[in-house]
Image (tube, rainbow, N blue to C red):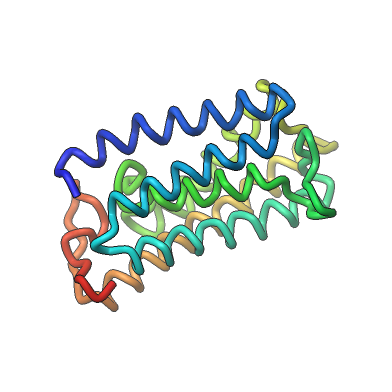
Length: 194
């Protein structure tokens, strides 16, 4: 993988994110999901020497984020536009966003989960901002009372990002790697077996 991959990933992830959101706004939610999963496959291809570790991280982010977002929808704290397909509470494009986000956690977003406390605190702060932005873009609605909904979002995101930070720490120790401040989490430690 090229040394400049983190920079490449920032650009690719932002392009995919905007492609996803613009597709949703253009009434093409399946295309939105395809765009985000394409970014995820691109990431897995770029990190293919460490495919297992990256695939597990992507799956952990998608499942944990998707589960908590589904609970937020079922509780009335969130509503996505359009709603989930196939009777699911969460639309496919949101599953794609979570998968793509998981691919950034060792690279461009590693600062957010470099320490578990950052994941918990960062999640509590970032989550409400993310969905507030989604409301502005008219792809999500926040339930009422809004204060209660935003508290639920903050708690969910704290648990998601804190949980992912703990997963990365566990995985890093499992791979017998040391965390290096300022560098991607555990990437130097990943071995061919991953």
